[in-house]
Image (cartoon, rainbow, N blue to C red; front, side, top):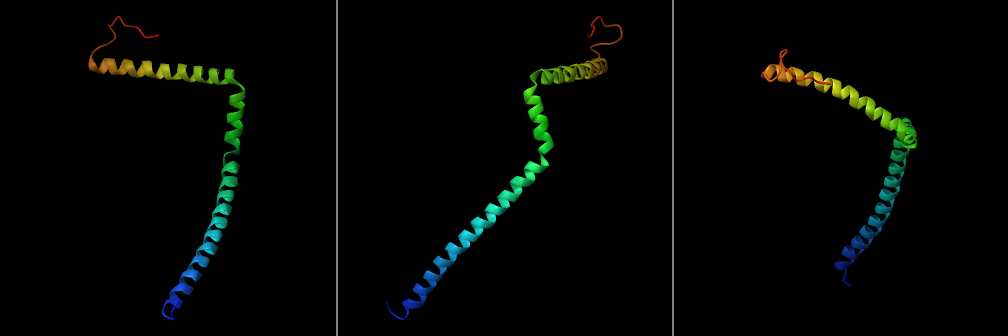
Length: 100
């Protein structure tokens, strides 16, 4: 090893040690950040997770909710389709077509 290559060798050694320390610190910081984020998400969505579990445990309730929503959507769709058909001239008050 010459005196000229000595600084390069020392620099390379120092850099490799720095990278190891830096990588360990980054991993530690990242781990703490992930843990804080996880706890924050659990806290934020606590009520939603509780509601999800209630619905998961009661499929009949889910079916009832979907049926009710379907009925409401159907009423709105029928009304809107009557308006559309009336505006384009397909149906009017003299039409024989009836909606349920």
